[in-house]
Length: 338
Image 1 (cartoon, rainbow, N blue to C red):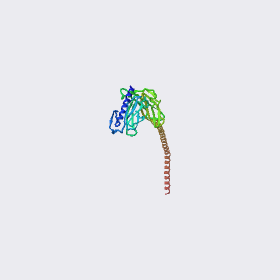
Image 2: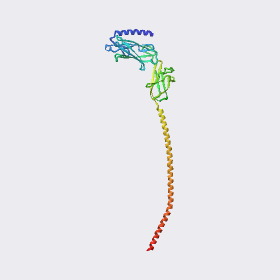
Image 3: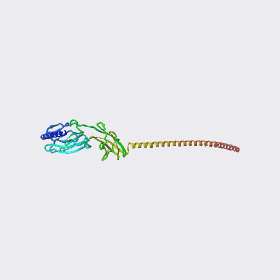
């Protein structure tokens, strides 16, 4: 059936090209629905892009054809679902203003050609404003018509810390689902394209993942230098590719080391507080001993003062008596002279 389909389509292409040649004075414009209509000669400077089908499966041929400015050279680019240009080629517009190019044969799905929606871009090398693009689908298989295909969802979820210690192990986790079901795979290429990069430095995570549970995988990673890194977890399964990413900062001073430093500082403060309390206690004891000693000295001085008073007072009394006697004696002697 496929061979008959290709023969039938080739006949249609030949008829279509003959019509293009007979009507080179008009231009065909590719609408969003890819139904074409004839426009006036005012748009003759632009070119018209056509493709043989919208949905492709492995071993299908992508044919690009249409009309354009005679003798123009067209640049054809194929952009994959990840917005990477994976194939570039050129084709020449003939003197009659038409072009035809068997652009590529779709391979079996691989890491470079995954199932999903692609963008075909065609640009004029002579007139920069002349460009067209069309969305196409690379699918696992056809269902009922050439415009429908099986579509599946492969989803990757990456979990990792955002701040890690340089040159120390940390663990990242990846969950992979296919149409909502957890994917159990031991194939090397399943997560083999996953990597970590920072500038020009790339750390390959191939063969580093281990299975924690069906659909959940982990890898132990070491970042060699301080800096900001981007982790890309990329899964390839049944021809589909999906990815997730996280930004991680590696530092020799992390939250863990800060907490350790704070703990050490707290310990030092506790020890200093204990020393201050001990010194305060010892100082209080010294002050109390000094106060008691001073009180003893005061009491001794008071006692000595009392003893001194008990000695001095009789002497003073005796002196007073002697003075009184002398005064009396002087008075008598003076009286006798009269």
